[in-house]
Image (cartoon, rainbow, N blue to C red; front, side, top):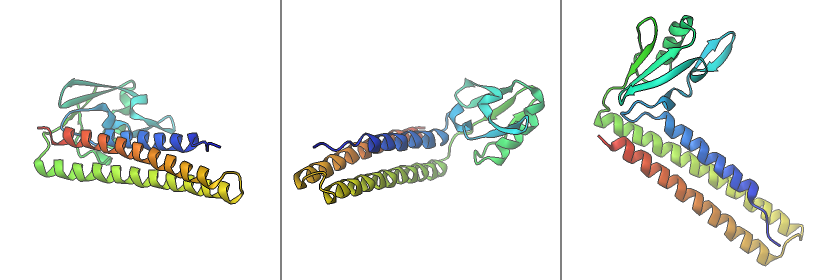
Length: 184
């Protein structure tokens, strides 16, 4: 009997997606609208993502321009950006907000590299926990005599192989992000 691990694969895919979001929020010298994904503004009584109340454009590699659909939101957007951990002071000209990303210093690049390594390690830990849940499920099946010992060993090997494949994807994503961070 083959044990179905689709649910565990789906959970690992979700972990990879979350890691990609985390990496996207780490700014690397270039202006990237993804760094604003976590910023919300109160709009008609509810917290709304910035891209839900404004157009975000990038006229050049180091600048983001935020054009709110309602100019009354300019001060709220400016305040939300200042309160975020972005570390950039927004420039408000009364119509749009400009974010100018400074060149990253070597020290800041190293800090950001440590941060992305931490995110990658958290993703790996989450994936190992998913594998452990899968192993527990397989042991339960064996205990209830739903699978044979050979099936159990094969299922455990399949789970480990799946984990190894996903860990490799995390390492590849980490390497790509580190390369992006260290590029001058």
